[in-house]
Length: 104
Image 1 (cartoon, rainbow, N blue to C red):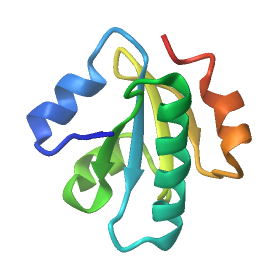
Image 2 (cartoon, rainbow, N blue to C red):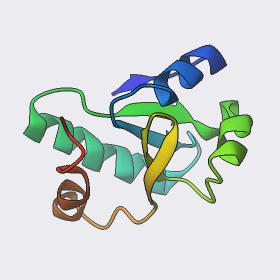
Image 3 (cartoon, one colour):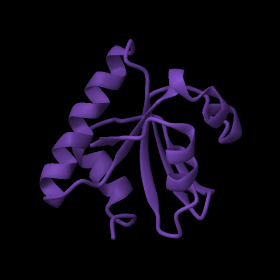
C-alpha cells in the first residue's frame, strides 16, 4: 500500500479519472491497524497494489472536503467524486465483495 504524503499528491490522486481506493487512517487507531491487515490480504489476493493510504491527521482539509466521519475509512472516488465510503471493515471476505467491482 503506497502512502500519499503531500497535499499536491492527494489532489492528483483524487482527481484521477479512474476509480481510486484510498485507505484513510490514523497511526494511533487500533482498528485501523486491523483494517490495514485486511486490505493487505486483499492486495495479496489481487496480486498487486490496489489501495493508497492517507494519514487523516496530516490531511484534515481532505477529511472535511470528503466529509469523512471516522477512521478507518475506505474512500472510493472517481474524478474527485465519492462513489462510496466504507467504515465497517467486517471481514476480509466482506471487504472483497465491497471492492472487487472497483478493482480495474
